[in-house]
Length: 413
Image (cartoon, rainbow, N blue to C red; front, top):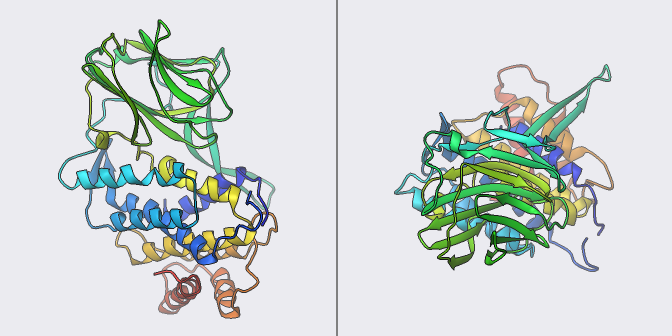
């Protein structure tokens, strides 16, 4: 198989999924069914999460019995089945624990100290820092015009002189300075092996040592250290201070803790950057300690599950393996939408999926030679369906045949 250096394609393919519902070592080979199961389970987790968690006025509500619990278990099993790295499988367990806690408690309380960095904010001052966003879909029109669908917006840091100052104290509902207890969490994505500072407060800083997050006081004393952060993957970091104990979490997993008697405080101003080469998003601060299930490592779910799995698969699978992965992902996505009261499947959705699966690009995607003629015919027929508004019974049957043929071929439940 062939290693694919096409990381830029990840955001484009992620965009296709969002539109639908909002190097291999020598001799190593993944069974096609395993590839499809990974794609199917990723799709189910992302869509079931959106079905389960409804956001209203910055507050999340939990809806039970959407199938997310079983989808997470299937995803974990599928990732282990293809020998994926631990930094992917380790992202699932904390989310399972959070959902279990959500059955009895509200694990998505109203958030006062939240910075999305998407819009202009008087409490955020940028010095050399840019705001950036990934392009999810880029299309060329017949008149050669180009249109883009943009994803999440974040702060982009590129060196020593770039910093972002956040005036925490300007939020009246947050009591600063925070000394005895606080929770500080955010997402970071490293573009290079880095040794700069991530965030600095009154008397401490969280910095990088060969991509390992390290918490030091201003005297240079080591307080605690985390695990190495893989480059190009969004990673959720959280510090929880409770009295004399300080804990560090990565993607919802506790990686280190310390009984530190010295002062640690979140002051009226904190600073991101100072040597950081990477991106920061979704800063959240609470003036109290919280249980780990209350951390927001699942917001956005695309940072925790979607982008990391897609990025790894895109780099590690060959063209035929990718075809099976995305076939499993798309057929599950469309099947769930068709059977859901909250979504519907349009001809345009089916056209996009079929067109994508029929695309021939030897370096990115390749139709499997063993693909049965009946399945190929169903895909080609789905591509040619014409959007005439409300679905007729005949069109519903054709969509059903398309989904059923792929589901049977991939041996998906």
